[in-house]
Length: 297
Image 1 (cartoon, rainbow, N blue to C red):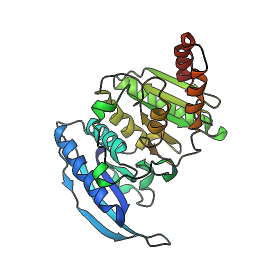
Image 2 (cartoon, helix red, strand yellow; image 1 turned 180 degrees about the horizontal axis):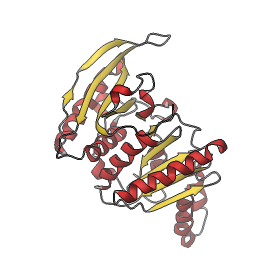
Image 3 (cartoon, rainbow, N blue to C red; image 1 turned 90 degrees about the vertical axis):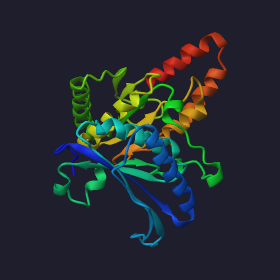
């Protein structure tokens, strides 16, 4: 199925599926999430409690499903801005558990349920990238406004046979941004590997210390949910300060959000190797080298 826009997003449903042993942690996350939404004056239209369900896969592992925290549009609200704040909080605070966001569109009745997941935003779909789980007493909930250092990046990596499709989506995405008076700080196409990205790809960056950039994040998520075609999208916040390799790795893994099936893993050792090279240079060269590496990402 090629994912293209046939409707408009009018809401979003936030889900978390966890093993029974993680129920206390998931319940704590749900409680903190709802409290955060309240502080941002975001009012869910519905919240389900956790329910025990039987898994459908071979092992039939019991799971706990966070039925839905629904954000649905009121006439005077920009739902995508609210989705941006909610999705970023969940990405930052899921604490090793998997979560996903399903868009609610005005054409949902025409979508094959078996294909609907291709529009979803996934967090932690690749457990190998997740940090080890912490106990409920130690869950470090954070506010996106306080940890966002410099906006966010949108990446699309592509295989050689997807090049024309990737260029088409890149052009259409930038036209959408322009039509909505959104000005990215940079938009580049890379014909070879770029930083931790081992495939060619494109990136559009929104770098600013203003936390209201999260409103733009919601609009970017909403557009790409419906218009990525068959490409995979990676969106990550910039939560690191200059030269902090550990924070860079966390932003690209634990805090990352995905739409579509990932094409290839990131080479996260790029960041530690870059930091090691910087430490070996004379002090006067460090900053320029770091910025050059950043520009190549």
